[in-house]
Amino acid sequence: MKKILTIGLACAAAVAALTSCNQDLLNIQQKGVIAYEDFYKTDDDAQSALTTVYDAFIKLINDQGSNNPAWNVVTNACGDELYWGGGKKNGSSSGGQEMNEFRNTYDSTIPHIKTVYNDLYSLIYKANLVLDNFYGESGEKCDSQIKKSCVAEARVVRAWAHFTLATYWGTPPLVEHVLAGDARPTNCDHDVLMTWVINEFKTAIPDLKPRNGKTDKEGAWKITTGNAQAFLGKALVFDKKWDEAKSVLKQVIDSGNYDLVPTDQLLTMFRVAGDGNEEKVLEMNYIYNQGISMGSWHYHFQRNQALFFRNIKKYPTVLLQAGDGWGNNVSPTKQFMDAILTHEPNSARRKAWFASYEEFLTDYPYPLAASTVDVPDEDGKKSKVSYKADADMTEAEKLMDFRRGLNCEKYDETYANCGYYFMKLVPWDCDLIPNSTTVTEENRIIMRYAEVLLLYAEACAMSSDSDGSGLAALNKVAKRAGAPTYDNLTMDNVKQEKWFELCWEGTRFPDLVRWGDAATVLAWKSHDKMPYLGDEFYVKGSMGKKTTGKPHKARVSYIDDGWAELGGGFQAGKHELMPFPFDVVQLNPWNEEKGEGLKQNPGWE
Image (cartoon, rainbow, N blue to C red; front, side):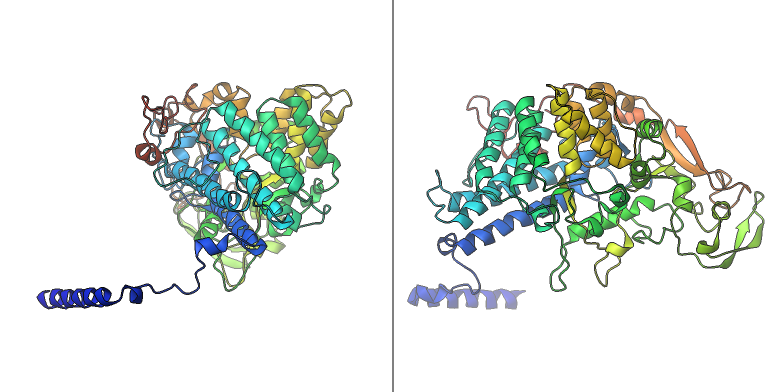
């Protein structure tokens, strides 16, 4: 240690002697780096700066917040569509489960909340770099059409980020410029923020280009006139400006640049085969490049989705074969399934979005060759049973196949599952990038045309529908789904159709809050028992050591496992908004006297 210290002191002395002779020798210019003052000038610079905005957008949608993709948790966990399960209660899905159940342990330290909040402001920062350097205070720096377009795209993204913050946090800070390091941004009044967001969308639209028809894939991957108008229409609906919302959303509908995909393409809507299709208003684009990493966040999202089936012996061939491991086990709630099965039990949409336990075992191809295996009977005695290859089996034979179904040797039951699997966003094996078993490259949807039609239907239902175009928009979505159409345009019908069509796309919880329905619709979460999925094929409690001789069939048990006690349920006046992250408030505490800092939302203090 003494020798090392002596050498270190000698080196320091040598550097001091060198610098005392010539300070310029230490001013070594970094290679491959452009100085700040030399960058924000040209059209190419503007396009490069805008690229970093889209990169931050992609990171937001896929970033991790502990074990689960944070965006999915924040935008979906609090709704009534899905149980946020996991391998077990209090397992690796902590955070998602706490928010899903409104537990007493749901607080401002949830990592997913911090991740999304910080990523939204990081996105705003990147957009502000473009606007501050290529727009200025009043557009004086926009000296080319390219710069005007880049500024407009950045403006839309910045407005969208503020709208998202306003939706989930109510009164977040409005950040219009790159902030100094000592800035203490404070809360912005919600109505003021919404007015600003709406005006920002309007300001940007004239400098944007429209999508070039329904087949223009690139027009689904970047900010255009169409998606800016769609975002504006949505903000106007949320702000209850019904007539103006109708006018703006009608422009998107009449543009001819978007449409619903045919019914038989519902299965590929969220896969690579559906990337850039006519229904995509905006999506984050992924292109495999052998020399560039897809990023751990994209890998985690795909693996996490695949692990919905972690308790299954064999996955269907079409699905990503992720194997056992961490991950949440999201499944639809009983309330949701009861509603959609009552309305459209055999619709194309229901079958594309959800599969019953039995359908999961029989309606998909499995990687099962002909084989002979030891099968235990109800007394535990094993005997050899021969099975055909999956492709040669009838449905009845599949339901008697010991090789498929719940992995009861390890999991006797699956926590938080009422007998149905959520298939809508699960990645497919054919979407894998080359030489990978865990990363797929399907795009992530921000908004699709079905939402535009349903927002338009809502605006008509809340104002007037004298020409019947609102009902037509509603029924266009229902008809494509293969579901019953509606005779009348009512808010109840709009709410139901939006619930079924856009489940787990980040719309349900904000809708319940703005409609004033959250306290009523989510009340069951304070007292209901949790479903556990078992299989009639196995003797319950034997951990797969015994079979009953009955076919595979969902056996759902509703168990009071302390969920209600941990939950506490939805609290009106608190849970409508999410808490500002603990770390953010600690670094910028509210100062009542000075009127600065960040004031925590009601109920989260």
